[in-house]
Length: 169
Image (cartoon, rainbow, N blue to C red):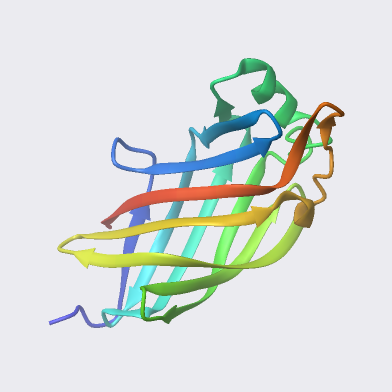
């Protein structure tokens, strides 16, 4: 039987968790991730549609395999990490769909909050809750409009992927 009342699961960097992104430009793409993030997933009465998700990202921990790109992402034209060292996601609803769940909430990045909804697979297995998602966002929704070099334009769409295993607190 599902646990009565709220149950909190903790999200923290570990070998199982992956929180990443892929940016695209004319000549290819670049993947990146965050090294430091934390959060909670609270499920009430075992009903995943009551789930409340809160995640905080340390934007100073953002990295890619290209050191020059990582430095560029810290700049004011991109994440403006000097003024906005943290990004957050707070869910507002989790709705069951035929394919899994639609998670809606507010994503705060570089001082701008935008409403987002993305499809996710969410399961509870013993003392863990697992969530996976793969979806696109437009970086311009957070004021990131730098298009890069004229002969190698950066696309607006960024793909976000995550695989989270959160442990019961």
